Image 1: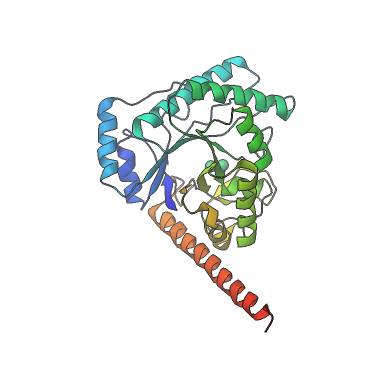
Image 2: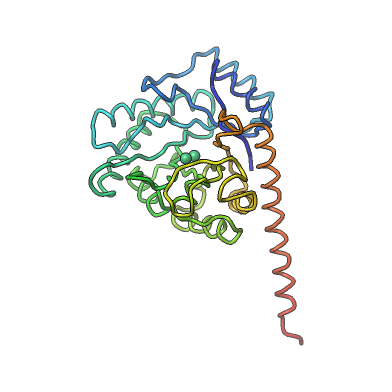
Length: 303
Ligand SMILES: [Zn+2]
Ligand SMILES: [Zn+2]
């Protein structure tokens, strides 16, 4: 697992690598444009060259771009959908420029009408964005389930993938806080592994592409999207370790989107804590697998 954090792109995309290195990241996530304005942007050649050079010399092995939160591919308002499409296309193109692992997208929200119609609208926008870009993968992120947000369950993510044309560039990003808030109890190895199994069963092998590790201030099934620092929420250190240790998650990039001690995002210490919890979660699995094997041996009939 490549563990890291969301980092600021202030001063240009090339600066994001050093921010990642300072925070002990093997994966980073960035916004490719100001999260408060619609105007999309791609990078100039100089920025891309400086970024690639910095990245090659660093331990940062995976880069995710998060599409900005203004986007709503499922909006009832055509103008919002068009703006969302343009912004998503520019994120995908920026991802292609810098060799991003994926663009992560909140699939959308519907204020009125049924989920099916909203999923169809989101799917149409996403299909168009894929058609207008070349190669960058797109990961649809599960949501905490507040209001009319789409993607609150694995079944709904499956419907979104289908509505988006089941393109091979499509994948899924799972956020631990959103999972918990939408009712998936991932605080134990059994709970986290059951979720991973459900994802594989319903979405197919290889669809799960990235993870967000956030603790949750909101309760199980509360539908509240409130990120807490690792260990400071309802998941706790133990719950985070259980989530990170799931065998099916081990090849994925995983970034923290926590507020941090100072409200400026995850610190290097928090990334290191996440890595320790990951190791603990993995060790917990091998230990329980071993004791399971011992129990089975004992139960075996004697000849
Ligand atoms: Zn997230
Ligand atoms: Zn969130």
